[in-house]
Length: 412
Image (cartoon, rainbow, N blue to C red; front, side):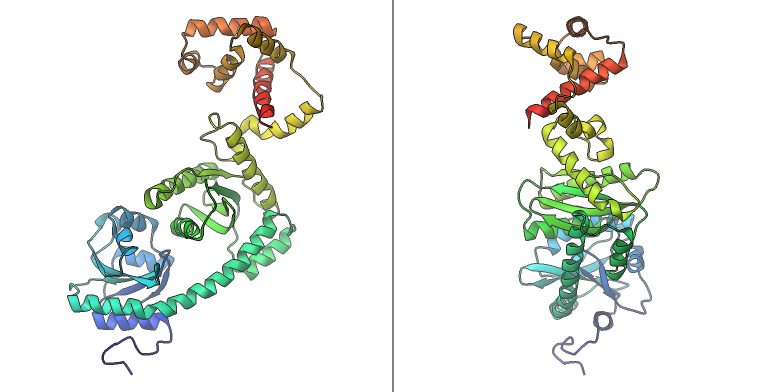
């Protein structure tokens, strides 16, 4: 029996039944989403719907392009700051028709949304009040979903830490856990790390989770938090260009965190891309190596995020260990260091810059703020003093690596 004053006082067996009740009262299609725009219920037997709602029902979440448009037009920021229903005008390029939205709140936090698609009629002021009552009535049922979800996430995050630290090693055991926890498998994966300037608070974690839950660029399989690090196991969708895809995802993530939540200064990295889960620990260590190298060589590898893109920097820890054991030295570098110190010159800096700019004379001269002729003279002096053949690739690369390694050693 429906309460006369409050039509939502009745006991509803499910959120689907609740959505149908709202739809009957307002005579329009209804969808109910969680705070990350994943579909949790929708009304049945609709005569009309728009492309955005159809896509949401099919994929069980709001398309990313729709979410981006709702942020740009100010709809989502408004819903996150008010309990009042909000009229949303048509956004044709993402297939969104006229609708009214209202947030579902628990204390000072939005835990979901109700969307009413206006089909052939405009919701009245009384309808708006009814939708507001529906949002209040939906709170407890949405909270029950959150409680179940949080308990599962705790178990999943504990499992992820075991993978990252190598406590579960065999591929068979890992697959068994994936299946038991209903974690989707993937043909290839990488461990990705977002490192923030300060410790990750619960509010920041929710903001990060929101971006990850609404992205459709990559598949996020697992995630956890370690002090300033947000660690993810992600699956690229592309078999042909997974590095490009992960780089694009990192760039997009940083942009959205800045534009939506005003979070800057995120250091990002990802390890190798592998096809068997036994390599999760290895990929994680590689991602940490990238962050370590970015900290020590911020200018040289500023735009590099992937371990496979580190080039010679991959080998620095191993090379430094060998060097400290006295297993090799570079006489050319020793001579150039002595010459720079005695004559207050910067031949080593010149040589490093020349290779950093792919041996381009004009770009190197511009970076060093010198004339190209001056650069040519310095390179000639480097060859003479270091007794190195600048036409011999092996000698040139060896000196370049040793210059980088000396800088790296000075930071330890």
